[in-house]
Structure formats: C-alpha cells, structure tokens
Length: 227
Image 1 (spheres, rainbow, N blue to C red):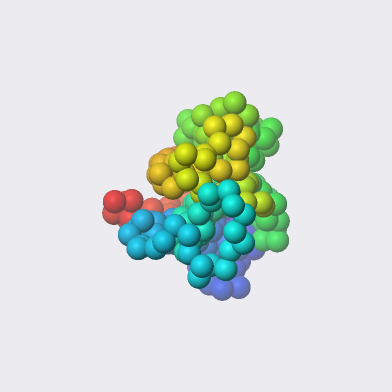
Image 2 (image 1 turned 90 degrees about the horizontal axis):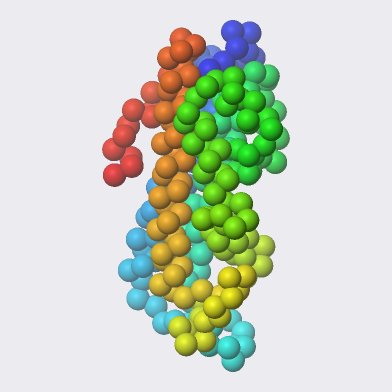
C-alpha cells in the first residue's frame, strides 16, 4: 500500500502503518460485502415464497403490492451492493491521501469521485483507472445511465420500494414501484457496476504501488474471487 515513511504505526500490527492497516480492512470489508451479496442473491432467487406473505406482518393497502421474505432479501442485496460503491470511495480516498487518515471520517460516498479533490488526484497521478472511476460516478448523475440505480437505492434505504404486480405497475420514471423481474434485472446491473469499480480500483492501486515502489496489495492477486 502507498504510505508515508513517517506514517503512524498501527496498534494492531507492527508491520503496517495505521493508514495501511485501515485501507486493508476497508478492502476486506468490501470483498466480504460483495461475496455476501452474491450468496444472498442466490438464496433469494431460489427461495420458494408467496408473493404476499403474512409472515412479514405487512399492512394490506389494496394496491396489488407484494411483501415477502424473498423481496426483503432482494432489496437487502441491492442496498449492500450499493454500499460497496461507498466503500470503494473510502478506499481510494484514504489510499491516495497524502495526510494521516481520520478513521472517524465516514462521510465519504461514491459521489466523491466527481469532487474537485478527486479530480486533482487524477491529474496528479495521470492514472486512467482513476479516470474510469470518475466516469462511472458521472453515470449516476441526473439523466445518466445509472441514475435509476441510485434512485432505487435511496428508495430502499430512506423510504420504500414496492414490488407491484405487472398490470398495476406505474410507468413513471420517478415511481416508487418495480416488478420482481425488474428488481432482479437492476441487481444484476449493479453487480456489474460494482465489479467494474472494484477492478478499476485494484488496477489503479497496483500501478501506483509499482511506480512509487511501495507495498502491493497482495490479496488482490486472488483473481478467483471474481468468478
């Protein structure tokens, strides 16, 4: 990992700086979330469950919406996957920062990749993988290809997203409804986006560690985790 020579040593291990240790742990948590999402997605799509399941203790609103453990799991998978994007922003921010980290500074989100601070890092490093992360983040802006994924995440996290019967599904782009087929389709799209962001990040860090003769992230050599 990239670190200053005079970086504060970690209290957890004598062979790493505090900054290096923190970056490793963010990376480990990122991979744990990604793999857990894959497992829970597999479990959810193979779960035999009624579309209207009284076990969830839902309130019947007479609007043909569905509520079940399966849909709850699918929404949870979507949220966890989207959270991976925020963790990627954390990892890149702390890795390329020249200052000591503040582990309590958690107000960094995927949108940070469009900030002036990150633009300066791209210009300084001349790293096209970082530029790819910038472009990917732009795709989540208003009227961009992945803005719909951001809207869905915000609905699930802060409000609600109904799974509706096809014949009652609203066609409005700002709707708080989706179908089970569309929800699964969106999750598959998000898997591709997150996987791409992880790969961009890994390559960017690898190249930076070689150019600056710093410690590599050995764990990233385990390419089989993406299969």
